[in-house]
Length: 191
Figure 1: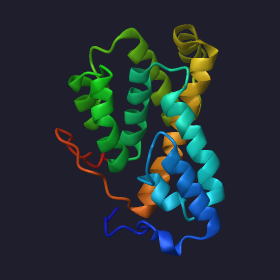
Figure 2: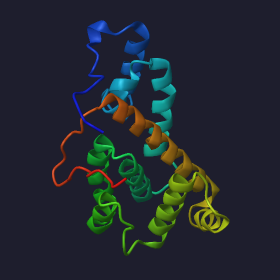
Figure 3: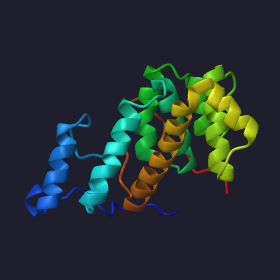
Figure 4: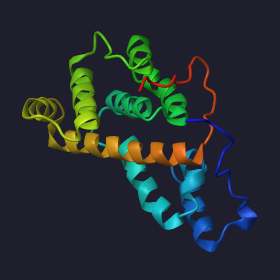
């Protein structure tokens, strides 16, 4: 894919319609505090953006998954979609939550991370199997259910789907990544 200039830059507040102003104000009042990343493009469809951002807000800030596991799963999706904005935004969060640099580097390179903790291994196996095969085997399902419980398992599925949708929006809009110190951009994966 040839990258070029951003397709959907921020909308000037003076040019927003009423639905866009309401959606932007709601986003700014929430934990994100700004119209950033995928929400810049999604603001073109405020009635889609509002429920989608609420799903993301739940998954990022309230879900049944431990913060480290949420960040690991987010990085797995970002790598799958070669999504630079999400990668640059979530690598620092993953490091802060205890995901090792070794794990992040392996994900960046498209490799299975060595030395994963048990819960990380379960999330990695479940996420990669679901993303690769569009379903999971009984052993993978049972391991995830045993480790995370049914709520955690469903929240993991929701997180993978949410960040997949967000990654598609960002890639179509060509939203630029915000540079983060110590975060190398994702290289393309071999096809």
